[in-house]
Image: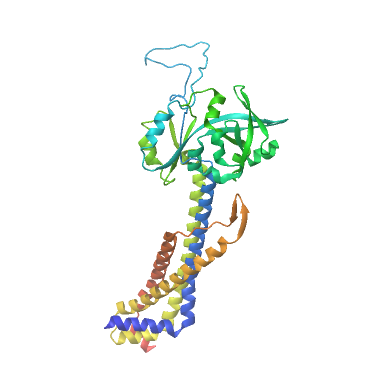
Length: 413
């Protein structure tokens, strides 16, 4: 009986002063909409940065990191022996990966890998007439490279697949082409550290929107790179791996590191600044958004306090009629929950609209045309839950206070 009456009384309180109810609801609406906007924008920035980074960065990389003991001069065979080495000479350590076929076969059995590609990377000088630029030429498996990095999407001139059939062809970064004054079908000379010099014809130009890559990198076919170094067909310098979830690289590393006698490195290990920057932006976004929700909660608390002060005599009469303190708490707590639900629903819609509008703002930089924005459902669910919890707490405190009112002292004045 009292439950239905309690609900009717709550409805009367909400509708008797519509302006006050709307103000309280707008507090929740604003808090939730700003939470959705901030988290969506920061997620968009992080995703855009990840897309830019992974246009030239593998999720997991396998490469030769040198001797395990970091020493290639002499090794102590027996622990108790004293070795005196005079005029020590550094022994050239064999670089690169020699058994790439076996490693690729191992990777093909892993479940979380979506693609992998072999590379032969060589530090070179690019020369055209009097211009000379230090950079890297990557010999690539054309098909797998495109699968891992989507390289064909970065081409602004030429066809990515043409590299399969042109052992004398080369793709250059757009900034490298500008510095060297290169155009399509021009020749460019490559000089390795061992003094090997060879000419290639420019058959394509790419742009990744990562300046350091576009200014210093070029692609040739992987067999052409092996010929440049004079190595066999099983030689590679890097194996790049693409995964289903780039944030969950550790299980794969744990599975394969004992099977592969080379360095297995995740992108997090090699790019800790990128990870730290992303985490910092997420933390700032959540802190700002939660602060907004807390401010909205204080607003609701003040409004509920005002409502209780205005209706103090009505509360006294209700208690005199037999309503218990818990009934009074339920009446005002129901009001707060209704305000939270209505404000939360409107806030989610408003947050989505604001996000859409911001997403249309022109922003021409690093290959982007608009400000980045994401619309992940879990952000909307979290915003609604936080908003509801905030209004519940903000409503409970004054409601509990109202339940302690002594009706006799109030009615006596």
